Image (cartoon, rainbow, N blue to C red; front, top):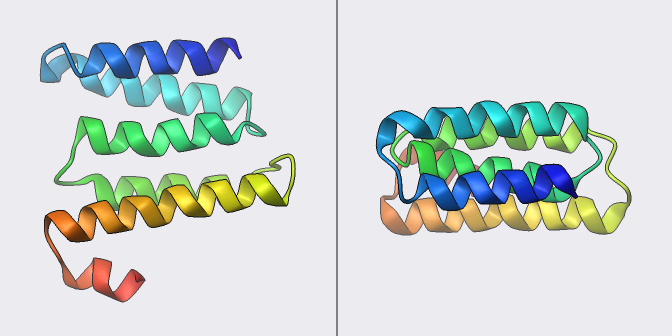
Length: 107
């Protein structure tokens, strides 16, 4: 619960600070997911943070995070479904913003 709160705090602050502070958010997310790999909330927040930090280059980062999260030992099927829902939500947001061949192939 502490990691989740801290990552959410940084994400909220990331929207208010300049671009130079945002990469730190990804480092904290990676550390949180490494230490609490069973937490779907942390994996989802990591995916969303990738969008926040670099919207233009988020696709590859989010895909990597999703792949690692899919292999993590989450607590049950419902958490894998939440993870897949977050991935699909990212694809829809990305495709709505700017359709690309890579995104169309994924969908």
